[in-house]
Image 1 (cartoon, helix red, strand yellow):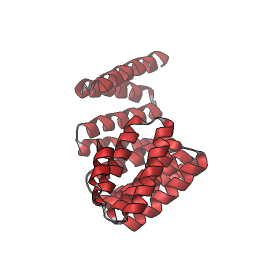
Image 2 (cartoon, one colour; image 1 turned 120 degrees about the horizontal axis):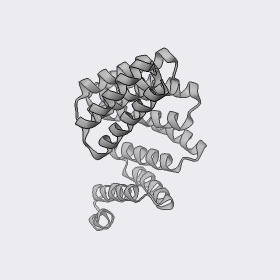
Image 3 (tube, rainbow, N blue to C red; image 1 turned 45 degrees about the vertical axis):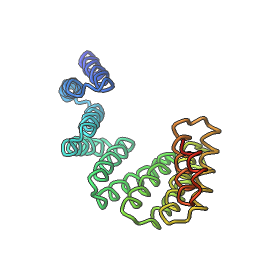
Image 4 (tube, rainbow, N blue to C red; image 1 turned 120 degrees about the vertical axis):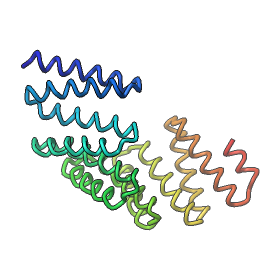
Length: 232
């Protein structure tokens, strides 16, 4: 059994290597080999993880049907063995697929179930992230009021735990809502707070996004000179 477990692990590692190289065909091949061995030795947690990994590959390929199929199989096993962390991950992944497909009702349903588990686990970082993700789904539907409510709840938790990266993301998202509502001055305030924080933590890609967002605001306000300065 120990030998088979090592063999499964070796196949899994090969699958991961091919995944990171972007060779998805070989990644699925090795993950499937690993899955077979894990099935023989009854490693349920390992099976759930590998099914989830295969789901991730199908998602990358845009094959959402097979992605959801693997995620759901993985979720079923995680529920069987009572792996709450695993359950939360699978629920999140399934919710993400529904969101990509524009099936917002199912996306919210799965992310809300994910949120419940995260609360049971006391995973504050996860709670903040999930609240933010639900906010994004409501924003995509044009429900800015509900989106704002989720973003603010998420921001509060990120501030509580001192997650600067998370705080910056929430500030940016709240700014986006004010931008959509045409409240440019408030949007500018949130984007500026976000930029200051991203500068402090040295988040270069985040800084670029914030500068661009501020540029958009100045463009809307008719200040083309400042718009060019921030966007370039």
